[in-house]
Length: 133
Image (spheres, rainbow, N blue to C red):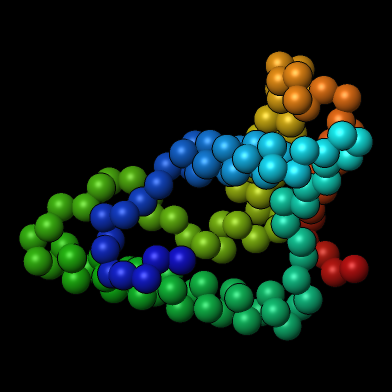
Protein backbone atom coordinates (compact mmCIF):
# COMPACT_ATOMS: atom_id res chain seq x y z
CA UNK A 1 0.00 0.00 0.00
CA UNK A 2 1.42 3.38 -0.92
CA UNK A 3 2.03 5.63 2.05
CA UNK A 4 2.37 8.86 0.16
CA UNK A 5 0.27 10.88 -2.21
CA UNK A 6 2.50 10.47 -5.27
CA UNK A 7 0.05 9.76 -8.06
CA UNK A 8 2.97 9.16 -10.45
CA UNK A 9 3.98 5.83 -8.89
CA UNK A 10 2.59 2.89 -10.85
CA UNK A 11 3.93 -0.55 -11.71
CA UNK A 12 2.93 -2.48 -14.85
CA UNK A 13 1.29 -5.85 -14.16
CA UNK A 14 4.08 -7.69 -15.99
CA UNK A 15 6.60 -6.09 -13.63
CA UNK A 16 4.46 -7.15 -10.65
CA UNK A 17 4.38 -10.75 -11.94
CA UNK A 18 8.14 -10.72 -12.52
CA UNK A 19 8.68 -9.51 -8.94
CA UNK A 20 6.37 -12.23 -7.59
CA UNK A 21 8.22 -14.92 -9.57
CA UNK A 22 11.60 -13.66 -8.38
CA UNK A 23 10.38 -13.77 -4.78
CA UNK A 24 8.95 -17.29 -5.19
CA UNK A 25 12.29 -18.42 -6.66
CA UNK A 26 14.13 -16.76 -3.75
CA UNK A 27 11.89 -18.56 -1.23
CA UNK A 28 12.36 -21.87 -3.05
CA UNK A 29 16.13 -21.40 -2.85
CA UNK A 30 16.02 -20.58 0.86
CA UNK A 31 13.70 -23.47 1.74
CA UNK A 32 15.73 -26.01 -0.28
CA UNK A 33 12.76 -28.36 -0.48
CA UNK A 34 13.57 -31.86 -1.69
CA UNK A 35 10.06 -33.35 -1.81
CA UNK A 36 7.24 -30.79 -1.77
CA UNK A 37 6.87 -27.07 -2.41
CA UNK A 38 3.37 -25.76 -1.64
CA UNK A 39 2.19 -22.29 -2.63
CA UNK A 40 -1.13 -20.60 -1.99
CA UNK A 41 -1.60 -17.54 -4.16
CA UNK A 42 -4.51 -16.25 -2.11
CA UNK A 43 -7.17 -17.37 0.27
CA UNK A 44 -10.73 -16.32 0.60
CA UNK A 45 -11.30 -14.21 3.67
CA UNK A 46 -14.46 -14.54 5.77
CA UNK A 47 -17.40 -12.48 4.48
CA UNK A 48 -17.07 -9.79 7.18
CA UNK A 49 -13.40 -9.29 6.39
CA UNK A 50 -14.11 -9.18 2.65
CA UNK A 51 -16.74 -6.49 3.23
CA UNK A 52 -14.31 -4.49 5.39
CA UNK A 53 -11.57 -4.83 2.77
CA UNK A 54 -13.94 -3.85 -0.05
CA UNK A 55 -15.03 -0.79 1.93
CA UNK A 56 -11.42 0.22 2.55
CA UNK A 57 -10.50 -0.34 -1.08
CA UNK A 58 -13.43 1.77 -2.31
CA UNK A 59 -12.37 4.56 0.06
CA UNK A 60 -8.78 4.27 -1.21
CA UNK A 61 -9.99 4.40 -4.84
CA UNK A 62 -11.96 7.57 -4.04
CA UNK A 63 -8.90 9.11 -2.35
CA UNK A 64 -6.73 8.17 -5.35
CA UNK A 65 -9.19 9.93 -7.66
CA UNK A 66 -9.07 13.04 -5.46
CA UNK A 67 -5.25 12.96 -5.49
CA UNK A 68 -5.30 12.64 -9.29
CA UNK A 69 -7.62 15.66 -9.63
CA UNK A 70 -5.44 17.65 -7.21
CA UNK A 71 -2.25 16.70 -9.07
CA UNK A 72 -3.73 17.57 -12.46
CA UNK A 73 -5.07 20.89 -11.11
CA UNK A 74 -1.46 21.81 -10.30
CA UNK A 75 -0.69 21.33 -13.99
CA UNK A 76 1.30 18.14 -13.52
CA UNK A 77 1.07 15.53 -16.26
CA UNK A 78 0.25 12.01 -15.11
CA UNK A 79 0.85 8.81 -17.07
CA UNK A 80 -2.03 7.87 -19.37
CA UNK A 81 -2.12 4.28 -18.12
CA UNK A 82 -5.13 3.08 -16.20
CA UNK A 83 -4.93 3.55 -12.43
CA UNK A 84 -4.82 0.31 -10.44
CA UNK A 85 -7.82 -0.61 -8.35
CA UNK A 86 -6.99 -2.94 -5.45
CA UNK A 87 -10.44 -4.56 -5.80
CA UNK A 88 -8.77 -6.04 -8.87
CA UNK A 89 -6.89 -8.55 -6.68
CA UNK A 90 -9.93 -10.10 -5.02
CA UNK A 91 -10.37 -13.88 -5.47
CA UNK A 92 -12.30 -14.74 -8.63
CA UNK A 93 -11.31 -11.59 -10.51
CA UNK A 94 -9.65 -11.70 -13.95
CA UNK A 95 -6.42 -10.47 -12.32
CA UNK A 96 -6.28 -13.41 -9.92
CA UNK A 97 -7.15 -15.85 -12.71
CA UNK A 98 -4.28 -14.36 -14.76
CA UNK A 99 -1.89 -14.51 -11.78
CA UNK A 100 -2.83 -18.14 -11.21
CA UNK A 101 -2.15 -19.01 -14.85
CA UNK A 102 1.14 -17.10 -14.80
CA UNK A 103 2.23 -18.84 -11.58
CA UNK A 104 1.40 -22.23 -13.09
CA UNK A 105 3.45 -21.34 -16.19
CA UNK A 106 6.34 -20.13 -14.00
CA UNK A 107 6.36 -23.33 -11.92
CA UNK A 108 6.24 -25.54 -15.04
CA UNK A 109 9.08 -23.56 -16.63
CA UNK A 110 11.22 -23.83 -13.46
CA UNK A 111 10.62 -27.59 -13.21
CA UNK A 112 11.58 -27.98 -16.88
CA UNK A 113 14.60 -25.67 -16.95
CA UNK A 114 16.01 -25.41 -13.42
CA UNK A 115 17.75 -28.50 -12.01
CA UNK A 116 17.06 -27.31 -8.44
CA UNK A 117 13.31 -27.57 -9.06
CA UNK A 118 13.37 -31.01 -10.70
CA UNK A 119 12.08 -33.88 -8.62
CA UNK A 120 10.19 -31.58 -6.24
CA UNK A 121 6.41 -31.89 -6.25
CA UNK A 122 5.04 -28.36 -6.61
CA UNK A 123 1.49 -27.81 -5.44
CA UNK A 124 -0.12 -24.51 -6.30
CA UNK A 125 -3.39 -23.48 -4.70
CA UNK A 126 -5.21 -20.56 -6.21
CA UNK A 127 -8.88 -19.80 -5.72
CA UNK A 128 -10.50 -18.72 -8.95
CA UNK A 129 -14.01 -18.53 -7.59
CA UNK A 130 -15.23 -16.33 -4.76
CA UNK A 131 -16.76 -18.53 -2.06
CA UNK A 132 -16.63 -19.26 1.62
CA UNK A 133 -15.42 -22.54 3.03
